[in-house]
Image (cartoon, rainbow, N blue to C red; front, side):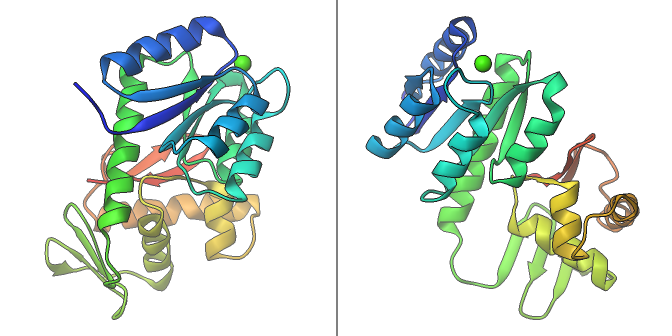
Length: 230
Ligand code: CA
């Protein structure tokens, strides 16, 4: 099986890198390997890769610097890999432009699921014309008239709920941190706003009839929220 999608794998732990290599090979992906931030950046500039899997703990530079550098010239999707105890790094990585994350130790199935989700998102972004209609599973948003529909039925959303839904939709497939969402919607990032964010998400989920944590709006505990591309 040949997969027309190439991935830059940046990981200094050869054991983890071997595991990723074997899995990507089996799935038919093209890939490039780097064990340092410097190599990652030179591969990223020289090759036309579609995505990057990036370990945050690299020997020569901080993975966050790699993201910052790449974001200055490319919107290539970046999935960061970090250890559970490095929660803050994950949040920082998402805030400076990473798209999603994997927590070590991760299963190869989880990794493949994240890569597939990113591919779906990219396809969607490429197909999307300039129309002002957003469609994702049962959800439709008409940006021109500021109305959202669930299976063709108009949703009655408050201004805040609508703003939140639009922000998630415009970043479909991407994990948005609490502080990012709050700063976009309320213009600040106080702890009290993060608490009210949870209230708004809950009421939005009720209206979208997706109270199930894994449905349209996914919760990333301690991190943020993500609209899943259906
Ligand atoms: Ca490492």
